[in-house]
Length: 223
Image 1 (cartoon, rainbow, N blue to C red):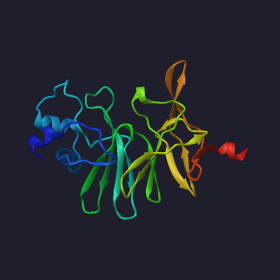
Image 2: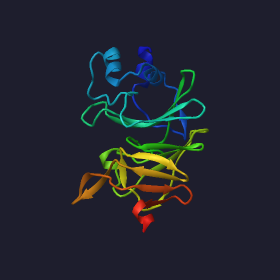
Image 3: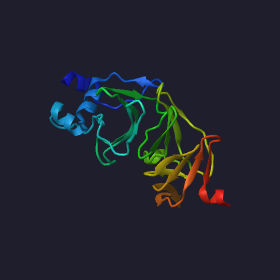
Image 4: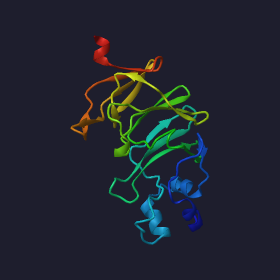
Protein backbone atom coordinates (compact mmCIF):
# COMPACT_ATOMS: atom_id res chain seq x y z
CA UNK A 1 0.00 0.00 0.00
CA UNK A 2 1.42 3.38 -0.99
CA UNK A 3 1.00 6.76 0.66
CA UNK A 4 -0.80 7.89 -2.50
CA UNK A 5 -3.31 5.04 -2.17
CA UNK A 6 -3.89 5.97 1.46
CA UNK A 7 -4.52 9.65 0.82
CA UNK A 8 -6.79 8.94 -2.16
CA UNK A 9 -9.00 6.48 -0.32
CA UNK A 10 -8.60 7.03 3.41
CA UNK A 11 -12.18 8.12 4.10
CA UNK A 12 -15.36 5.98 4.00
CA UNK A 13 -17.82 6.87 1.26
CA UNK A 14 -21.34 5.92 0.25
CA UNK A 15 -21.88 4.34 -3.13
CA UNK A 16 -23.57 6.06 -6.07
CA UNK A 17 -25.18 2.95 -7.56
CA UNK A 18 -26.86 -0.21 -6.32
CA UNK A 19 -24.31 -1.68 -6.16
CA UNK A 20 -21.13 0.27 -6.86
CA UNK A 21 -17.97 -1.84 -7.04
CA UNK A 22 -15.35 0.09 -5.12
CA UNK A 23 -11.97 0.38 -6.80
CA UNK A 24 -10.20 1.92 -3.84
CA UNK A 25 -6.75 0.38 -3.42
CA UNK A 26 -6.47 1.46 0.22
CA UNK A 27 -9.69 -0.33 1.20
CA UNK A 28 -8.63 -3.56 -0.52
CA UNK A 29 -5.22 -3.42 1.15
CA UNK A 30 -6.86 -2.91 4.54
CA UNK A 31 -9.02 -6.01 4.02
CA UNK A 32 -6.03 -8.12 3.00
CA UNK A 33 -3.90 -6.92 5.92
CA UNK A 34 -6.68 -6.78 8.53
CA UNK A 35 -5.47 -3.30 9.34
CA UNK A 36 -7.15 -0.77 11.59
CA UNK A 37 -7.64 2.93 11.01
CA UNK A 38 -5.19 3.80 13.79
CA UNK A 39 -2.48 1.61 12.24
CA UNK A 40 -2.87 3.33 8.87
CA UNK A 41 -2.84 6.79 10.47
CA UNK A 42 0.38 6.03 12.35
CA UNK A 43 2.02 4.77 9.16
CA UNK A 44 1.00 7.55 6.79
CA UNK A 45 0.20 10.55 9.01
CA UNK A 46 2.45 10.07 12.02
CA UNK A 47 -0.15 11.64 14.29
CA UNK A 48 -3.86 12.20 13.95
CA UNK A 49 -5.45 15.43 12.80
CA UNK A 50 -8.64 15.40 14.88
CA UNK A 51 -10.46 17.41 12.20
CA UNK A 52 -9.89 15.05 9.27
CA UNK A 53 -12.82 12.70 9.90
CA UNK A 54 -12.88 8.90 10.24
CA UNK A 55 -10.42 6.74 8.33
CA UNK A 56 -11.71 3.61 6.57
CA UNK A 57 -11.19 0.47 8.64
CA UNK A 58 -11.77 -3.23 8.07
CA UNK A 59 -11.57 -3.92 11.80
CA UNK A 60 -15.22 -3.84 12.89
CA UNK A 61 -17.79 -4.97 15.42
CA UNK A 62 -21.30 -6.05 14.54
CA UNK A 63 -20.32 -7.20 11.03
CA UNK A 64 -22.05 -10.34 9.75
CA UNK A 65 -20.23 -13.21 8.01
CA UNK A 66 -22.19 -15.55 5.73
CA UNK A 67 -20.61 -18.57 3.97
CA UNK A 68 -21.99 -19.40 0.52
CA UNK A 69 -22.25 -22.90 -1.00
CA UNK A 70 -19.73 -21.98 -3.74
CA UNK A 71 -16.97 -21.22 -1.23
CA UNK A 72 -17.34 -17.46 -1.07
CA UNK A 73 -17.89 -15.55 2.17
CA UNK A 74 -19.99 -12.40 2.47
CA UNK A 75 -19.32 -9.78 5.13
CA UNK A 76 -21.90 -7.06 5.62
CA UNK A 77 -21.41 -3.61 7.16
CA UNK A 78 -20.56 -3.27 10.90
CA UNK A 79 -19.03 -0.46 12.94
CA UNK A 80 -15.50 0.57 13.79
CA UNK A 81 -14.88 1.66 17.39
CA UNK A 82 -17.39 3.47 19.61
CA UNK A 83 -18.90 6.94 19.36
CA UNK A 84 -16.17 8.60 21.42
CA UNK A 85 -13.45 7.59 18.93
CA UNK A 86 -12.62 9.94 16.00
CA UNK A 87 -12.61 6.93 13.65
CA UNK A 88 -16.05 5.74 14.76
CA UNK A 89 -18.12 4.94 11.70
CA UNK A 90 -21.01 2.64 10.85
CA UNK A 91 -20.60 1.11 7.41
CA UNK A 92 -23.12 0.09 4.74
CA UNK A 93 -20.85 -1.92 2.47
CA UNK A 94 -20.60 -5.57 1.42
CA UNK A 95 -17.27 -7.39 1.20
CA UNK A 96 -17.11 -10.55 -0.91
CA UNK A 97 -14.24 -12.96 -0.28
CA UNK A 98 -13.61 -15.50 -3.01
CA UNK A 99 -11.95 -18.90 -2.59
CA UNK A 100 -8.67 -17.66 -4.10
CA UNK A 101 -7.89 -14.98 -1.53
CA UNK A 102 -9.37 -12.10 -3.48
CA UNK A 103 -12.08 -9.70 -2.40
CA UNK A 104 -14.53 -7.23 -3.86
CA UNK A 105 -16.08 -4.34 -1.92
CA UNK A 106 -19.52 -3.04 -2.86
CA UNK A 107 -20.92 0.27 -1.63
CA UNK A 108 -24.47 1.62 -1.70
CA UNK A 109 -26.34 4.91 -1.48
CA UNK A 110 -27.37 5.64 2.09
CA UNK A 111 -31.08 5.75 1.22
CA UNK A 112 -30.85 2.28 -0.34
CA UNK A 113 -28.91 0.63 2.48
CA UNK A 114 -28.44 2.72 5.65
CA UNK A 115 -25.42 2.30 7.94
CA UNK A 116 -25.97 -1.05 9.65
CA UNK A 117 -24.40 -2.94 12.56
CA UNK A 118 -25.23 -5.78 14.96
CA UNK A 119 -27.77 -7.16 12.49
CA UNK A 120 -28.44 -10.76 11.49
CA UNK A 121 -27.79 -12.19 8.03
CA UNK A 122 -29.73 -15.26 6.86
CA UNK A 123 -29.10 -16.96 3.52
CA UNK A 124 -32.27 -18.05 1.75
CA UNK A 125 -31.69 -19.25 -1.83
CA UNK A 126 -29.96 -16.44 -3.70
CA UNK A 127 -30.68 -13.77 -1.09
CA UNK A 128 -29.24 -12.82 2.28
CA UNK A 129 -31.87 -11.28 4.55
CA UNK A 130 -30.36 -8.55 6.72
CA UNK A 131 -32.52 -7.95 9.76
CA UNK A 132 -32.14 -5.41 12.55
CA UNK A 133 -29.55 -2.78 13.37
CA UNK A 134 -28.24 -0.68 16.23
CA UNK A 135 -27.17 2.22 14.04
CA UNK A 136 -26.62 5.86 14.83
CA UNK A 137 -28.74 7.12 17.70
CA UNK A 138 -30.50 9.80 15.64
CA UNK A 139 -31.42 7.30 12.89
CA UNK A 140 -33.10 4.67 15.09
CA UNK A 141 -36.84 4.08 14.76
CA UNK A 142 -38.08 2.35 17.92
CA UNK A 143 -40.89 -0.08 17.14
CA UNK A 144 -39.79 -0.60 13.53
CA UNK A 145 -37.63 -3.47 12.28
CA UNK A 146 -35.42 -2.80 9.23
CA UNK A 147 -35.22 -5.68 6.76
CA UNK A 148 -33.13 -5.73 3.57
CA UNK A 149 -32.40 -8.46 1.04
CA UNK A 150 -29.00 -8.78 -0.67
CA UNK A 151 -28.96 -10.63 -3.98
CA UNK A 152 -25.77 -12.76 -3.99
CA UNK A 153 -25.71 -12.95 -7.79
CA UNK A 154 -25.99 -9.24 -8.60
CA UNK A 155 -25.19 -7.75 -5.16
CA UNK A 156 -28.13 -5.43 -5.49
CA UNK A 157 -29.76 -4.74 -2.15
CA UNK A 158 -33.36 -3.78 -1.51
CA UNK A 159 -35.53 -2.93 1.45
CA UNK A 160 -38.12 -5.61 2.24
CA UNK A 161 -41.43 -4.06 3.37
CA UNK A 162 -42.91 -6.03 6.27
CA UNK A 163 -45.90 -5.71 8.59
CA UNK A 164 -47.33 -7.35 11.67
CA UNK A 165 -45.90 -7.84 15.17
CA UNK A 166 -42.36 -6.60 14.54
CA UNK A 167 -39.64 -7.21 17.14
CA UNK A 168 -38.86 -3.50 17.01
CA UNK A 169 -35.47 -1.83 16.58
CA UNK A 170 -33.62 -5.04 17.42
CA UNK A 171 -29.90 -5.77 17.43
CA UNK A 172 -27.41 -8.40 18.65
CA UNK A 173 -30.09 -11.04 18.09
CA UNK A 174 -29.95 -14.53 16.58
CA UNK A 175 -31.69 -15.51 13.35
CA UNK A 176 -32.30 -18.93 11.82
CA UNK A 177 -34.28 -20.26 8.88
CA UNK A 178 -37.22 -22.53 9.67
CA UNK A 179 -38.97 -23.67 6.48
CA UNK A 180 -40.22 -20.40 4.93
CA UNK A 181 -39.76 -18.30 8.06
CA UNK A 182 -36.85 -16.47 9.66
CA UNK A 183 -36.95 -16.93 13.42
CA UNK A 184 -35.54 -14.16 15.63
CA UNK A 185 -34.57 -14.71 19.26
CA UNK A 186 -32.50 -12.90 21.87
CA UNK A 187 -30.77 -9.58 21.47
CA UNK A 188 -32.01 -6.19 22.57
CA UNK A 189 -34.51 -3.69 21.21
CA UNK A 190 -34.35 0.08 21.42
CA UNK A 191 -37.52 1.43 23.01
CA UNK A 192 -38.69 4.87 24.11
CA UNK A 193 -39.51 5.75 27.72
CA UNK A 194 -40.56 9.35 28.35
CA UNK A 195 -38.70 10.40 25.22
CA UNK A 196 -35.44 8.65 26.14
CA UNK A 197 -34.03 5.65 24.31
CA UNK A 198 -33.86 2.47 26.39
CA UNK A 199 -32.23 -0.84 25.48
CA UNK A 200 -34.50 -3.69 26.52
CA UNK A 201 -33.71 -7.40 26.40
CA UNK A 202 -35.80 -9.28 23.87
CA UNK A 203 -37.48 -12.22 25.61
CA UNK A 204 -39.84 -13.09 22.76
CA UNK A 205 -39.52 -15.27 19.67
CA UNK A 206 -40.52 -13.61 16.41
CA UNK A 207 -41.09 -15.17 13.01
CA UNK A 208 -40.97 -13.40 9.67
CA UNK A 209 -42.88 -15.26 6.96
CA UNK A 210 -41.07 -14.93 3.65
CA UNK A 211 -44.31 -15.76 1.83
CA UNK A 212 -46.44 -12.86 3.02
CA UNK A 213 -43.73 -10.79 4.78
CA UNK A 214 -45.72 -10.69 7.99
CA UNK A 215 -44.14 -10.74 11.46
CA UNK A 216 -45.71 -12.92 14.15
CA UNK A 217 -44.81 -13.66 17.73
CA UNK A 218 -44.83 -17.31 18.76
CA UNK A 219 -47.46 -16.72 21.42
CA UNK A 220 -49.67 -15.04 18.81
CA UNK A 221 -49.46 -18.16 16.69
CA UNK A 222 -50.30 -20.39 19.65
CA UNK A 223 -53.34 -18.24 20.39
